[in-house]
Image (cartoon, rainbow, N blue to C red; front, side, top):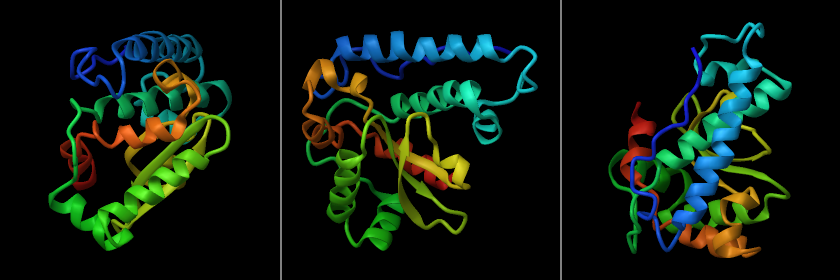
Length: 194
């Protein structure tokens, strides 16, 4: 079994002006495709052939972990978006869990955004659930994923520069502020309830 580049669940220009079609073309079509190709080239004879990417991330290290982590992280990242919506907010169970764990949606957004802006170098900021359903934020460097901590990843922001540099140059906080307009809370809610 080899991995394939995931199809985007929206048109390339659907996330504009938050994320441009040019950025999506480079980020999804070039960066992610390279991780997929690298992972497929590394798997033969590794003992990880035929495993789902989540299992590879939990068990592998080195180059296999790095490429599998980037495939999984990017797949989750690209699948969680929709066309921009002003005043975009979660509802149902995920909204209640955010309020219970962070005090309010605004407090959650503020903490998530600050941790994403403050992550040194390249990596990901994640909202995840622990085994009891408690929500936690983790900063993961490089290809890190909360699965390796026994958590269930729900929502992520990619803060590698290739995720935002074409559209925002070095203005990471502006990218993070606009990110909230394109989160598809239905997807995040389904991940939480699964």
